[in-house]
Image (cartoon, rainbow over all chains, first blue to last red; front, side, top):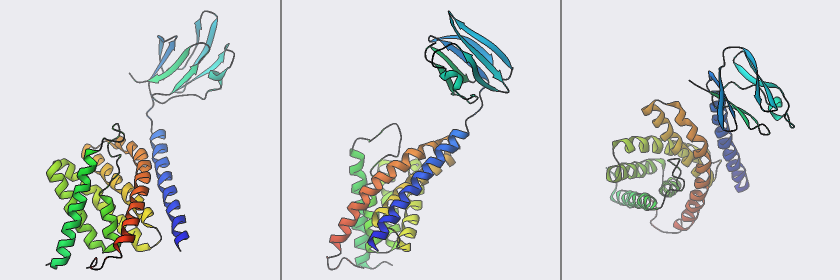
Length: 114
Length: 169
């Protein structure tokens, strides 16, 4: 009987932890869509784009290039000449606060709100 | 009317709970950025009363404690938060104890987390901003930790006080 209670206690703890996780997920999924795409190169804001206007732009910084695509309210990088291509692999972003980072090019694409 | 013995015991236990609340106020906050992360020392008394006496006495002791602490150290606002937390906490602890499925640790964890939950729900109600619910993630974790500690302490006290004659209603 005592052992049973310990098991139940642990189940209770797991239940509460999953509740915490559920709250976390609800807040994560409820993030608001942003309307501004901010492009920062080397800590300086270089460009701002409206997320609702579909465009394709090449962001140049010396020899470094990243192809930024804005499509259907989401943003992603389709091509880049950086060595690791992590920015290209990153999924499309659309919520406030989400970012795509290209470390080798010191490029940050961030979604914000006007 | 309450019997004199019952009245005295409830008064003593409530006084103990009030003192524990005060002692906890003297301690520095564990993590100041998130209000509500605390030990909940006074909950030891609630646990002990719940396991030694009945739900009625637990509700009485907790109510007296919450009212007194809010009137001495707080204001009407803190009273609203504490009442919400205390009511939910006592109800859930009484229910879990009745199922006889959990040890004092489990009951105390549920009580601690529900106390936080009640306060957060009240805060959402008063400020009408659902974003406050985000705190609950951290409060769940802190509630589990402090609830475990309080539950262990409570179980020890219950074990020793059971040997006292006259420790009954």
